Image (tube, rainbow, N blue to C red; front, top):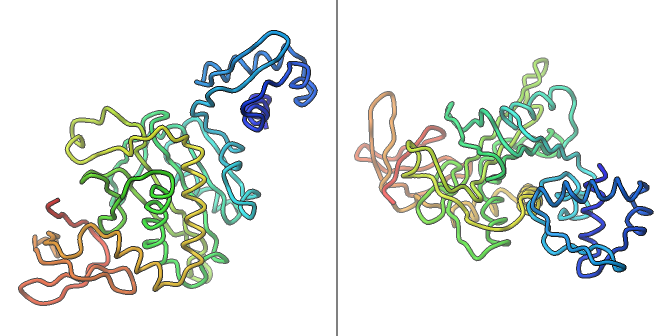
Length: 316
């Protein structure tokens, strides 16, 4: 931990009481001057710290500082030792995580960025990722975590985001198949799961689950203003990141049947007319079910169709 991160951790653990400058210096193992400089950095990043002569310092408001230890503080004990990488800026957390996976990163390694310069979505789409306005995160899962069921991530990722939002807020998000999370008929989260394959065995070696949530975005580019929304919360990004990670692991421990039941319960499309393109032809039908592989079952004029990928549109 940096001096700044250690300082914030001490103040958060002593919330409500003053910590003397001498106590801070002793705990940090640095001079009062170094502690004061770290305090100034925290203040510049949005923390409100009260200083009272002869009493010390007290944290009033933590602000929204994204740090590995800040995220770890909210994780359950069994996940606290997971590797957490926080980057100021990156082209794409998924790209970074896939490279890390190829270089041997451990199961559960999480990559979180303040800002993405080339955030990626499904089917080659981009994901708008302005600085400090959202949660941009990718988690690496090794085969030991998912066994022979890498397709579970299609269902688990959407369920975990919904569960995290519902636990931390009073909001009720829904899932637009395959894995876009909507709130008030607007997309607030995109999910991109990518597998890496062991060349020798031809089997899936790891899965990188990328999650981008619009938390505080206010100004979207004109081309997505009509469909992009925001969670609109003052929750810290560290807390949201930790809860999504926690829920991902919870979902992966559940049976396929439990996850599918949850996924269907949050579906935005079941029972509605959907439009899709198949072999270059636009078609439509009623979405009636999601099968045990996560495929969307659509009844068209020609009969039942199984959609296992692609984009659909639905009137909201």
